[in-house]
Length: 395
Image 1 (cartoon, rainbow, N blue to C red):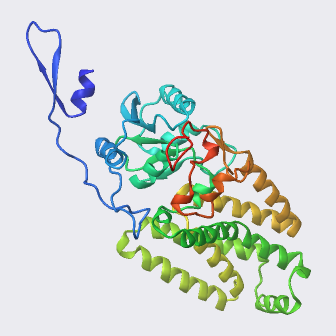
Image 2 (cartoon, rainbow, N blue to C red):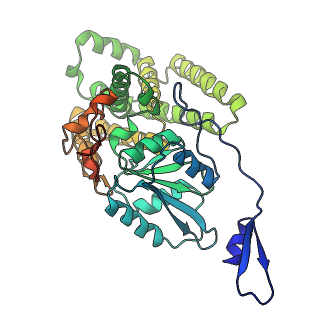
Image 3 (cartoon, rainbow, N blue to C red):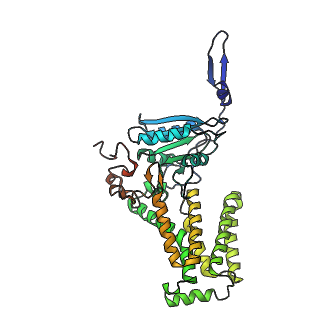
């Protein structure tokens, strides 16, 4: 154990004729302080975020939940890095079988080292048959604490400012941390907008291709004539227009992320305006395609989880492929496959579409629509937790 402590910044003191040694923590502070969240900004909520310091992250949870049932089980992972991973849970709420499953998986990991929470998440999930994430990444302590109080499990990784929340369902990615600090009516409205944006970003380009290439009878005649007149001088088929412009927009988005902040926003805005206008004037694409691709990309910006956004990109392309061969019939077929795939997913035994499939009536109060806190008396039923009573004490 000496080498681990020395590499962790401790001083080891040896004494003659004494078979034990003393350890003193003398390490310098090499971490940044508690700062605001970059990926999950908030208007009314707390501004602090997780950091690379493991003990600070534990402290950020402790200062919010002052309960002796909040437990942290720490495991070292990695033959070379020996990275600490803490499993945080509230003992008298959480399903202990889920905690045991996570511990067993973590103890079986045999790897050189783990650097990021994404690597840890991929190892825990293993091979998955769909691209949608089943665990939530967050750098906000208030989101992690809300999940703990609902009976979920939080993983804290040493030297990583992101925590992992298990299990994750589809409705979790349609929520925002700011929902807890808004009135129920406003929060419900924004969640409905996110659900609508999710449907738009996945299916609208495919619907446009199906209508313009196959099913002209699906829209009014005047609208069809207007759309057809815009494509009069365009030499490419509709599906090529959509795929080409979507690719350009995705490249601009990646440029916006990778380029330094001082010039990233200007590149994406100017690039989108100039390229879109030039493509329309050159009759390479029609104006309606620019509008549709822009709307789908804007709708995807409502979500903060990168894996969730990437999953919508992949399924948008799959929808486009089916629509380009079979029209609206292809959209319906891939839509059914999409729903069946989502319904088949689960995370630690929790259905991905819960509380809608299977249907839990009491859990509808904080699924898409949000009720007032004094009306949500029980924790989510689908988590199979011990203490289900949230309001009014144990029943």
